[in-house]
Length: 399
Image (cartoon, rainbow, N blue to C red; front, side):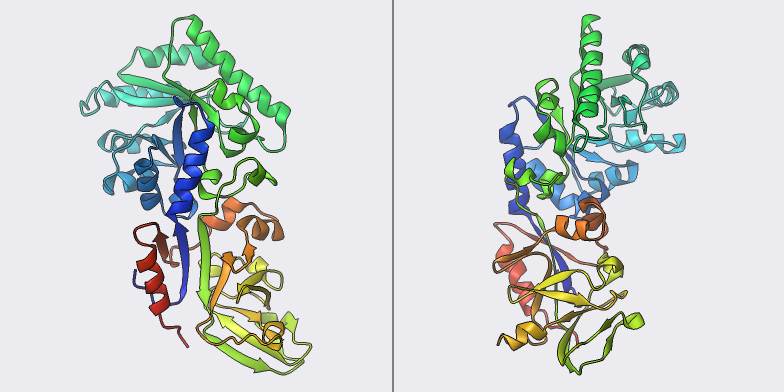
């Protein structure tokens, strides 16, 4: 909990579990839910969020690669972990067995290599579970639908255990017709395999957007993979009307320097902002090295005393400047040590991740995944909220 530069990320575990339970309530009772916790749970912290998810009744965890799975296993997490990305190169395959991870397979070569190794490992009862990925239209990782049946039969006759068949939606937000085509492609594969007496435990294709906009993804299939919704992020504009999720992440800092500057003074590198009047300018100890994009220069806002104030001048590596003039002229006293919210809520105002993403022409994933490791994460829940808030309050600002 100790940190000395007063900039940090707060993660509300109560909001996280609230979102999970909303999703769970929406789905049929038999539907399995995999929490996508790749990229360190989208910058929120994979280990504490994975634990919270499993404590709340979650079923599976999804990571991008073997390394992320190993991190969770070394933290004592025993739940099934599906590697959603490629497991190449072959030299890494023994780690899959050692840490009892569930790989994605999408080619005969990978199946044969895993099968060869499986003969040397008896630690996985019933054989190493694998999920077969089908390319229904993403064009990334996945076997062609026409080749699925033959590869499924090879897996069933191997030392591996085929636990799931799945695909990845390319345009769940913007192209409902293409999405419907992808869903139907996977459904036909399921029907064809079942006609041959091949019953595979899980089929899945639903991401957060499809979970809301395409209920057939959980009516046809029995497994979903939410990411954004768990973190209270919106997969499309208006999604809050379909499911009232709560934002999990807040980004905060404190004023470390405050000065009065005359009119005509240039602010930050390149002098891209010039004061038009006598101004009160505050410095915040956060910058692009923390993941606060340089594109927010002269464009973003932050919250001080529940009011929006502008970021002025270029965002630097470690610091940004904000203009407090209107706030101070309105009679609101502000001093060094004042808490500032860059993402989150303060008073009646709120700055959303989606707002920042739209401002610089990107997506919410990039904003939260880009928050640097040098920003400490503080986890708030029913048991530790009081202690966490006390620690923040007691921190002295740098000067």
